[in-house]
Length: 415
Image 1 (tube, rainbow, N blue to C red):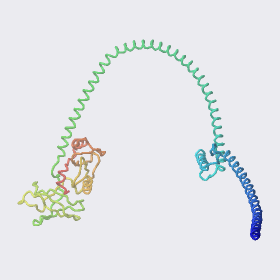
Image 2: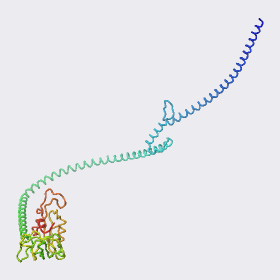
Image 3: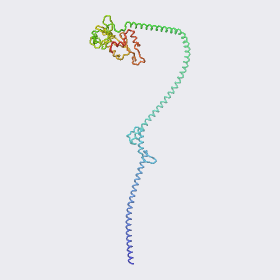
Image 4: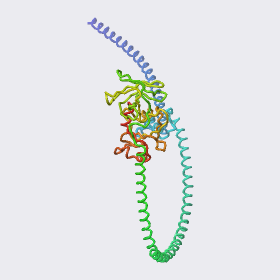
């Protein structure tokens, strides 16, 4: 029984020791934990102090931004937020549009505002100047209005005076008109006989004029007829232009006594007439084919009689050709085709025939072309005009100028 008590006491002591150890350990742990807690608490206090300091700094910064936004604007007042950069840029764009002096190189309000202020100040100065001008113009307008009213008053007075004068003039005019009407009536009666005599005199004058014109036309017709009788158009001129020197019957060629010395041209044609005295038989035509100085080779064409050949000594004639003198020709009508006016002029001048523009006393020939479709100015005519209807044609015939139709001219020249 005693052993059991001692054992129990030993166990109790062990447990007591264990409890004491555990208490000591717990106490140690308590002190250690309490120290750590103090350190942590101090750290937390330090963080809280720094956080409070940061909050104060942030609040000060936010307050400063809000104060800046209040001055600058462009922010949401309901939320008291800071300035919106996009809104500032839009405002700067609007400022550029309002003030052209602010160009794209100005990127901030601090640079744009002085320019805007300067432009606004200049604009205010212009407005003030215009207001001063407007005030001056109003003053001038008032002065002009006053002057106009004064002039209107003077004008009304002058009009009233003129109306009185007009009434007096009307009265005088009526009286004068009555007198003049009476005088006119008397003058009409006096001039009736004179008017009848004047009409009779004019009628007599017209009759005399008509008779004179009829007489003039009759004399012109007679003169034209006499001219045609004195200068009739013939197939050949009275004197021969040359003669046939040699004839080659086999080659149908010959030689004539005209050449380049006589201004002979290639293609010129001559009528060949018998060379016997008093014999005027036409044997054919001779066309120039070669030209030398004093003679030319010709080809015989259009022979009239095979049994009456062309022989040496036969005479040759050409209407326009003249180996000696100078002659003058007038062209009238239209010339076209193989022989236009320019070529015909060159041909005639080559034979010493001068082409004229107008009719005069030296004109020897009048060469008549075809009908005309344009006038002298180049305007197209509504209807063709015949050369024979022109006054120049009638004047030339009346003066005895030899008329040569272009169709007859082709007989004497190859073109």
